[in-house]
Image 1 (spheres, rainbow, N blue to C red):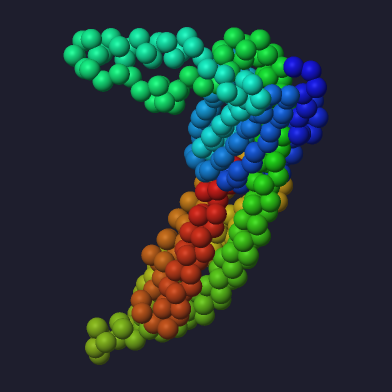
Image 2: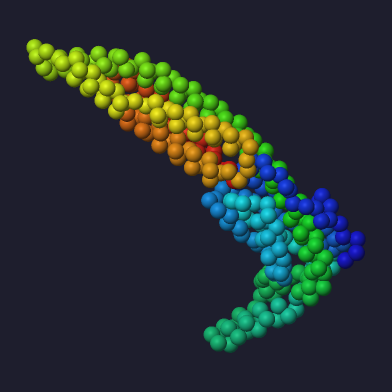
Length: 316
């Protein structure tokens, strides 16, 4: 079909080579037109652990599927992706009747009438609404398939490039939100460190007081008291957890700033951060003022990490 044109970046447009952070959520569409047909391609993507690709093509376009799948895989690494191609004939082709298809439906209907003794005649209007009856003959589509395939590839390139831009914009918003929450985690960890240092001498004094209550007039052995205080302090020491938490925050920020296709790495780091927060809470001593404050801060850390993890679920 001479004179066909496409609303896209141009024939042979290369797929986007951008390696910036991308969300897995987005939608885009593009179209290409000829003298008596229009091709529309839409691409919809949502988050998924792997690349879960679904193509919907009209009858007669099955040969395009392998190349379309390959092109989508070159752009997307993860996500539940739905690609829909619509072929819309116009002019005389749009109202053509595929007589062979209609005859097949009529033959099937008449066979059922004879087999079950049905007197009602087939409804012509209903037959015309059946799939494949109205539209261009398969031979007409096949005769233009090489051009249709080229235009479909060009159209898919445009849709995928639009999708990439949308995914990058959403990922930028997600990055900003996660950076704010990472800063909050770091700040809360610093406050826990201060409280933990403050709690050590107070904890030793409370231990001594408790032992005196239990032993009554019996004299306390200073060496034994120091040993018990040291053991108790070691069991409640959260410095290692705080150090690892701070390290994970720095790693997360580094990956977030410099990489693409990092959703799984970020999710793993968040699991490690949540583990450190849980251990911190399990070591928090008693119901004293410092202990209650550390518990409150630890729960805030866990909440921020969980909110970051919700955002990471959308990162490719």
